[in-house]
Length: 142
Image 1 (tube, rainbow, N blue to C red):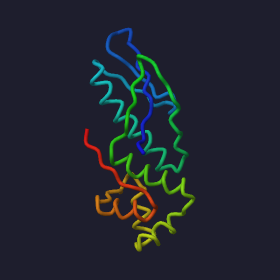
Image 2 (image 1 turned 180 degrees about the horizontal axis):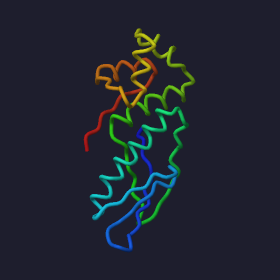
Image 3 (image 1 turned 90 degrees about the vertical axis):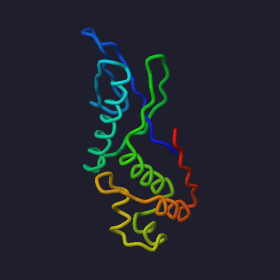
């Protein structure tokens, strides 16, 4: 499972580019080159998702979008990993306490794993979590 959102890219009249995430109201960015735009988009996406999480607002699902001017962007790992953990737990219908009990850790410790501001689970902890919820941990370096 990866968290990705479509980014719709536009050429700016004054030069360079600007882009928007159609699924994330108000999440826009710009850059002089497409490469810079994509870097800025990752930062904008990560910040937008972290703020939504912090305020306990729902995180919208990404809708399919295709086109020559569409790129799919992943948030930074410090945001995507906690969000993936929460998404999997919610899909399984488990509470944070139930997962913490399966892991034999405190509720507060587990709660931190789902918080982009403080999450920093190790690979060993993520592997243990995957086992506890019946998932397989796959690490990809691209």
